[in-house]
Image (cartoon, rainbow, N blue to C red; front, side, top):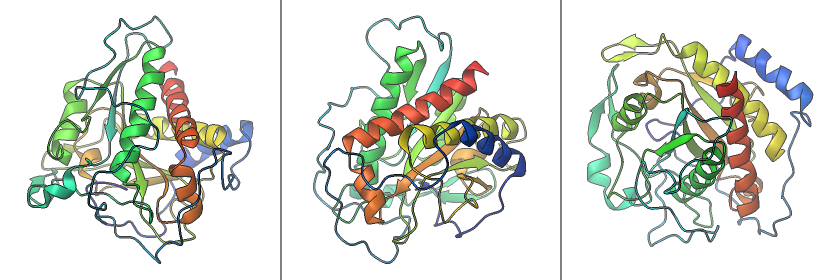
Length: 310
């Protein structure tokens, strides 16, 4: 879920040009229909979900295990210690923004402090949501981000994370945007999972709207971000088998918003990706599966690579 906003309405106008781009990609994929309910990993579906989840639903107390069993690389913003291979993305810089921070729940006062987002002020960050069985969104986003970093670095990209659970809380939404800007990133992807009602399923990609006011001006990145988002959406369908959201974006998998500081303050192409709904048992079964998270990372990597190769 977006870390700097309240729950979005159930429907938004679909951007026609971007929707057409997604449709074109879907024609060459396995289709944009409903995805599988499980991916063969043997992950059990969580128990019955609540009727709805708040976008700031706190993660359960206590340290959350990482179901992937993989160690988290150390050093926020650091890439591989080994020289990068030559590949399709050599010379390109990608910033990955794992939504939330697992320790935000221990710093509610700090994350509730308002920061300037150009067109107003919003909370520094939120805790994110979780599955009914207690798998926190912040753990999910870090796991997928690590997998995505590995895939992009294998193609020669220089990859930076906005954080790696290596700080007490945050970074705040304005700092997350600033990290991508200062890196002069060719693309920034913020990884999330939603917290909506049971029965609301699928992924969606959030695109920046045209915003100009205060310190925000997205006029130079609206078109490029839409291209990035459409390519990610198309490849995410193909690789994961998941369908575009059935509750946001008019079945395009795309949603344009003007109220997210992480997008409003960006000066480089950037999108948010809501990989699924943690509060729906069927989506939760996917999100808690290590093998599905690898597919999600691959879909994101393929979309980013497609965008950067042009």
